[in-house]
Length: 259
Image 1 (tube, rainbow, N blue to C red):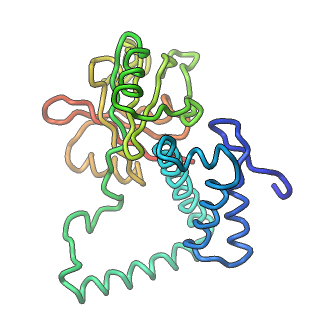
Image 2: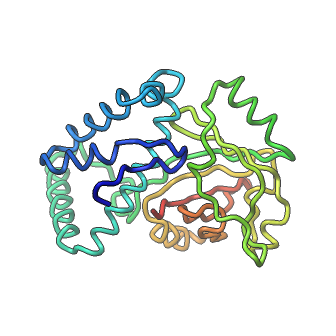
């Protein structure tokens, strides 16, 4: 809203990144100059901002920005739905890109060319235990990963019918991938009416990948005859998560950011 300062959701700290973006739009700035404005505000605007840009806080800042970027991409898809002209413009650019690739065989890549979704990227590894304190201390203090605030992951919590889970969980990151350290919950699948329990059997609960279109990816699994448990948002409020097994029985998660 005009005149209001944006508030960072996960820490309660007041930030000015959105103001920088708004300034960029008002000045008709390019994405590059807008990003520079963000960096100036985030790194130099406050003591906390400067800390996040040091080596000790850079990994956490990087992970946070990756989460924000995924949310922005989803907002762009929503805008395309409401404004068909944006989709037409995007389709036109994609056609130009295909023409360029067709004329330059060295740029061509046949893998994933016909997929309706981006190839899933490794996002996190989930480790389960009877208690997570020791796991958190190991990954944070021994492997020197940054602990991520729980507020970065809005959870749905257990429903009145018992679906989902509200067990304690901690998060760490190296700036690229994350470790999700969850308390073992053996009853999740039974309560949720699903065949797969992603936080029941350990020590590795599951390996998670992120895609940009969960519905397209589900159709892809259907085409390959891969059965999956569709948990939707029963674990994470802003993620649509599905779980399935690889040929050796390892539980795989694929999720997409909803907002």
